[in-house]
Length: 223
Image (tube, rainbow, N blue to C red; front, side, top):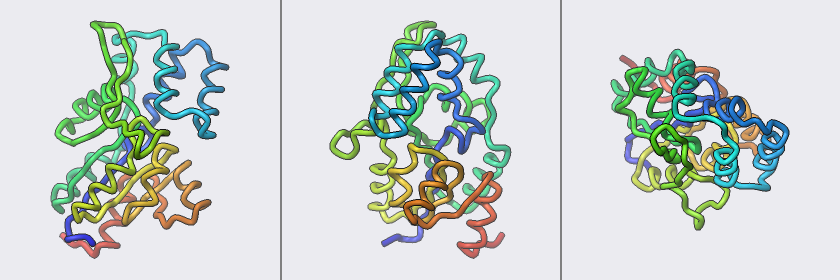
């Protein structure tokens, strides 16, 4: 049972960020393109975990921190996300980003667009000077989910256990574990296909302006 408090939980890659930053970076800087696509297909089919996939991608990567910084600088967020953050702040909604990607580019992009105060949980990119040295998984819990490096379901269930009404916003495969456990789901792209296939109630969206308008109507909000 909820106590009236609302938390907005959002994916990052392809949801807050316009593109899947991690995927695009690996796509550009992994020379073994055929092997990389085969790896991704195994991940999509559930034959390898996202943790195994990410560790392999980092082993194959031929780039350093400077390459990553240049790549990040060209990335953009959903054009309405900052307005949505302001909307959430006015309504006293809590806001949490959950990602099975890497903290380094999430942090960099949030700071770049003046949103560095937003809480997020992601996998940790390990750097050694300019060298990309590996990845750590501070949120990994094999007892809860062995397929994700940072399973979003566990975070979501913990929030619901605190009495929060959970609104989940996502677009991709890493959001499947969470979407069936939220009170309200906004979905697009692969997540929308998944919800429709599994008959999970969801609201289709394209941008965070759609999310804002739908929440305003569904929760009977007024200025």
